[in-house]
Length: 142
Image (cartoon, helix red, strand yellow):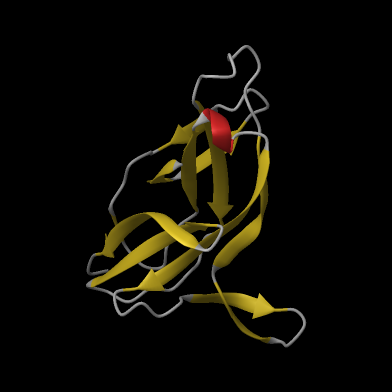
């Protein structure tokens, strides 16, 4: 399995497995962060299709510390910005069993996250607890 993580101003997936994105590919921003999206493309080999996998996507700072954004409703404490869940790695319609496929995912992040100036951040993507992709970006002086 291979993955690509890209940043966009906004993105939306559709039922055909396509992602529609605006402002795709940025690597520098200002703070507070406006609405943005994390786009993930998972390329699956035939033997990896038709399986369920654990996905974990998190935002960390340049020291590897999880970025906090929002509040955990169960503890009323600041919560790390993570996206986690199960993904069903399905074969795409019309593909032969020996063809690799690309599954696309889009995650929109609400505006307003305060980040530190002159700091690098990184989105880290793990599948089944294995780091398979990352995308970094910098915050310029406000």
